[in-house]
Length: 295
Ligand code: PHE
Ligand code: CO
Image (cartoon, rainbow, N blue to C red):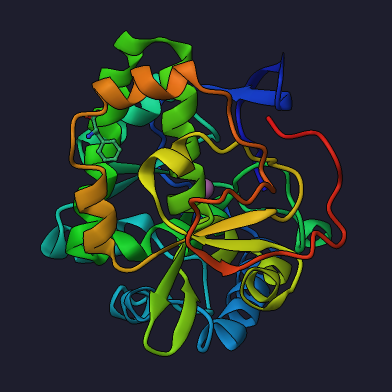
């Protein structure tokens, strides 16, 4: 297949991060190889098989309603036709992770950037950066849910505003994204279910997040989440559980300006810590946790 347009690599506190061109690209659908389609098929079937009982209903229904199937890598234009009629979101093709400001700008305008290239067969289980499978399979279905769709747009608008409050505010906002959009769990009548894309696109973390005794599972609280550090290179030590997308939307509706100020004065909470004020669903055993390395 053709390769993504990388500009350079940048050493950050999260490791060596590839920098891509930021422009929007047309999905080069004709140039996907048989191998690319097979990677999609394998990953799609594998996740569908386990997620039936693990992902939240909204995600499962939306995947079906969008017409995502195992057969071929979906065409962005087909998905966009469906999205347009439901919540007005659109997906746009990009080369890879975007700088924060560009990312916020897209979300604020109901555009979700999707990496157009897919991982190679030897990377089925783990990849250190988002590819098409993560972005499309993990993130896009929930954009069909009206409340979640509004949350994502509000997040983008909040990100644009947060620029004016400095790097601490941005770090706090990024934690919110991490513990909801990427690694969120939701409490349902059938028990805990997954809605975070980082979990949904990972074979191992689905089972781990719901069933392993190792991690903490703690009720969502805005300020708690925004002050909790995280690691990007291992399964999470803590998952935060929402009651509903409505709860998430309402909790984030308030003006964050005073919240940023208050949180900046306090020390951040290590990823695996349980606080006296937490609503604990499960207290993790901590088994297998690496020490340190929280960002
Ligand atoms: N309410 C936030 C603000 O005032 C914006 C926001 C909404 C942030 C939803 C995250 C999620 O900045
Ligand atoms: Co993601």
